[in-house]
Length: 253
Image 1 (cartoon, rainbow, N blue to C red):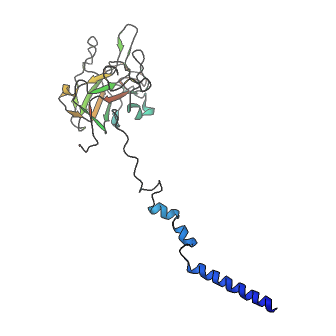
Image 2 (image 1 turned 180 degrees about the vertical axis):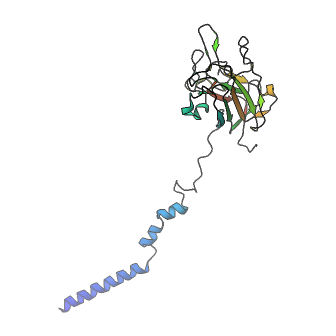
Image 3 (image 1 turned 120 degrees about the horizontal axis):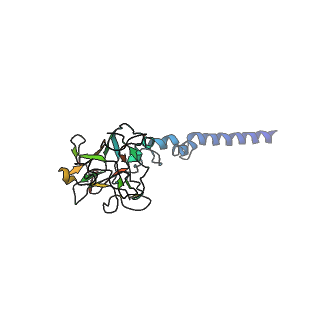
């Protein structure tokens, strides 16, 4: 009985010492360890790949195509392409060569109007063609071109517009100054550059023609004397592309 009592006393003393050590803490306690891995603390101030402290991915690379649709006012017989709007008129053209018209287009309808904006690259007056506008014109059996004309205007502020002269009824002369006349060759799938007027196809415009140094907006209006019916009437816009441009990311208003 005496030995058993001594054993119990020794065990109780050891347990008390152990509990006292844990309660006082020694710099390596469970609470201290958890403090460094607490998800709430990490989210509040530790860059773990998903917090505001991490730098953002940066701006997307500059490209020569329209970035925004400012407005679209469809006319009668419009509708085709609106299920993919606005992306269908942003980005590169989808040309199919001289004998085929692309279906990657937005039909404006009779007298329809669309305004596009460049936010990373502006069109500037440089050597020759500065801007290309792509429709889906194509050659027909008799060697003529099936075209639906559009009148192009440019602006640097979206308020003051400078229209390019467009002979909408001069079929014999090839409708000079109008968009929608020349078949489109450029397509991301074939590697043909959409910013090289020598190979891209589409219709080119020189800012010097309207006396403008820079343009950030492009407006296209259906000529009103094209073919209409169904939901694919009038000018069919594929894309617009900057040929001569300058960056808008340097703080230039």
